[in-house]
Length: 190
Image (tube, rainbow, N blue to C red; front, side):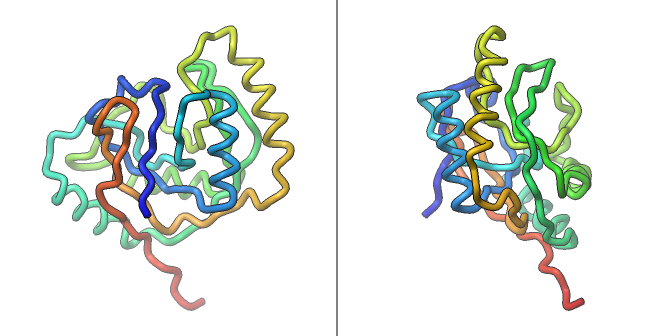
């Protein structure tokens, strides 16, 4: 069953925008969703790695999905390993850094951020998994410390494969719906 991302934190700025994400698999996803809830109560998150951040889109969804599928079909499946809890200084977003796969995420972003989906974001693209955002600046360090403490307790794998992307739309305040799946190329026999 598909699970929509729902979070009231900061969602108004992305209303009726589109993004491309890779959902993180279980059991890591549930751990990260719980961590996010502890940092920003009231969310109903769906842990993901963003490939194309939220953007306005005035084109036709079927054409965008076709273009995404065509471009992604030549991009190989790859692994991502999550690293340390970090904070973006300019926006006070608390996130998980990436220690493996960041170059592949950047390349995928570069390859798919074209045509009708091309968008120049406020900040340079930086592969990460968002954990908390849109709160008072005085809360950043205490929340980051809490996130580090919780993350240090995770004993499972911090690595997952990116093989399927989801094209999502912000359909209501804080609610994202999956529109289509986009597959990466399966690794050929080596």
